[in-house]
Amino acid sequence: MEAWFALLVGIFFTVAVYLMLSKFIIRVLLGVAVLGNAVNLLIFTGGRLTRDVPPVITAGADALDGPAANALPQALILTAIVISFSFFAFLLVLAWRAYEDLSTDNTDEMRVAEPVKEPMPPLGY
Image (cartoon, rainbow, N blue to C red; front, side, top):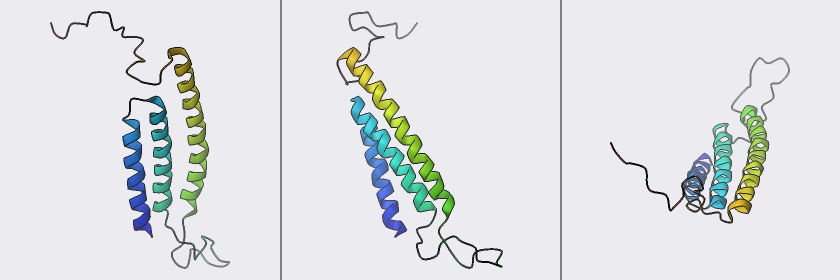
């Protein structure tokens, strides 16, 4: 089961890197969202995928009897989902404002600080 999730994490990371290398802002944002989901799935897979035994210590015992699912990665993932959603919403608003001001989502055309008609800076001295 973990092997399939590891393969899925690899696919998610591949798709995320491909999207983030795009020159369009919306694709970059989707890449960031997929990257966040890939990291969450990686943490979840690292915490064992056992559903048979809950991570509860029985009365009178000092430790778990056998292997059980780890609850810490699940708690971290719940927190990460909230943080990544708010981060994605913030980036979406920034992209929308940039699109409204510049009328494009192409990063090559967003070079306001580097005008096209200006001469190039010296490449060497």
